[in-house]
Each structure stands twice: as structure tokens, then as C-alpha cells.
Length: 76
Image (cartoon, rainbow, N blue to C red; front, side):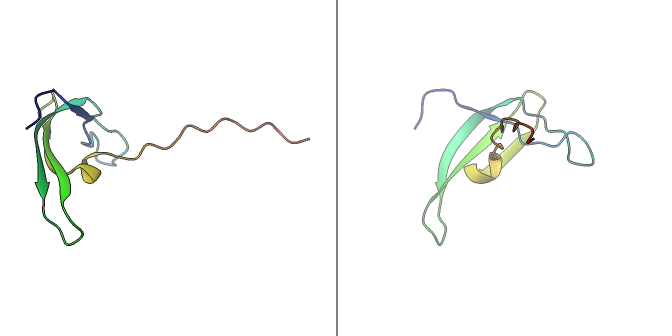
């Protein structure tokens, strides 16, 4: 059992096109393991201040953020 408070960015979409995400800090209410054919999956139940609730594998609750690339110099 974990005693510290943990947060993830809320993955909820805020518009119909899926272009804007909520991204408020969602509190992890429960951590648990779920069985799968590839072994146990780390899962969580989260809730953000706007009331969005999600329950499932951590990989599906977090998104992989694209690394910020530095602009390349113009070639001459």
C-alpha cells in the first residue's frame, strides 16, 4: 500500500476534435496490478479537480509527450 500522494496529468479531451486536453493534475486514488498474458500490468484509478475519472493501465492513462526539438539553422 502506498501512503504518498501521486498525480498524473488528466488525459481527458476537452473538445470534440480531440485537440485540447484537460491536463490538470489528477490524483491517483488507487494503485493495483491486473493480470495479463504478458504478466502483471500496473494500473490506477485517477480523478482530476474537474471530475474526470479514469481507471486502467498506467500506459493508457499517460501520454508520451513529444520531446521539444530545437529549431535547425537555415542551410545556405
